[in-house]
Amino acid sequence: MGRFIFIVVTIIILVLGGFFLYKFYFVFGRGVKAGELNYFVQKGYVFKTYEGKLIQSGYKGQAAGTIQSNEFQFSVANERIAQQLMTASGKAVELHYKEYLGALPWRGYSPFIVDSVISVRDASGRDIP
Image (cartoon, rainbow, N blue to C red):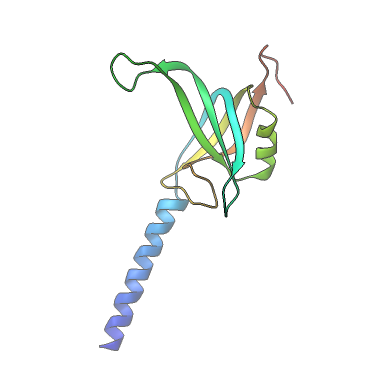
């Protein structure tokens, strides 16, 4: 009986561990988003994470007859990329991101994690190094 319980508990732990890895560490998608960086902040009580919002060109309506801008909320886990984005508020940026199936508190509030900045441009369209 003890061996049976050990096997069942081991199987349950392995299944839960596999689900956790799939939900929080499996990269579901990769992509690039471009738009104007609306804000970029560091926040959190225990885990200090970097969070930002990108306003994309164009409009969409959630309900018929309404207008709303396209927004892309994201998190950044890399300190170097965060410092790059801290100085880019209000500028046009292109961001490469990874999409996960769930968010982790130490990685950020969003399942979209920016892993590189492709370009930063000012209002006149010039690239900023």
